Image (cartoon, rainbow, N blue to C red; front, top):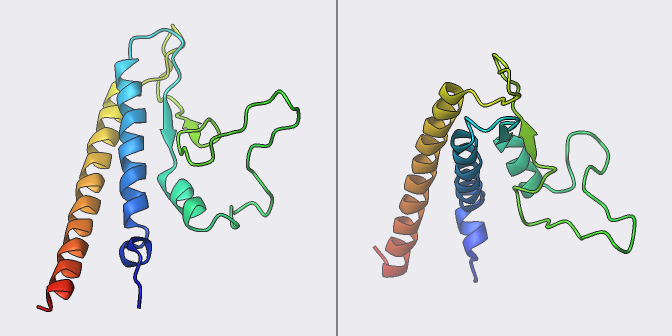
Length: 139
């Protein structure tokens, strides 16, 4: 009997990767807090993870993936969750005069929350690996 890492770990490895990429997006927002005209972006974690786990179900009943309609178009990178069709714009609580939509307090709170969830996913994966190691050793 052959067991793959994907079946043994379930969605947790994908969740960890997605959390790491969301960290990049949130850090980019914080870094551009003073950039005029910068629009804060974020990833809808549950939407992206569910679409990765079940690509045929997207909640809208139709195909929402990017398509090339001309030979000169670049093929979208389907494996990159940070592709433009995945990132959402964050609505500002108080828009600034320079057009920047970053609310530093919101971004820092989301960054901290994402960090805690990343650590939880990492701890869960660690316990899964320890369990597999124990099974291999026959303990």
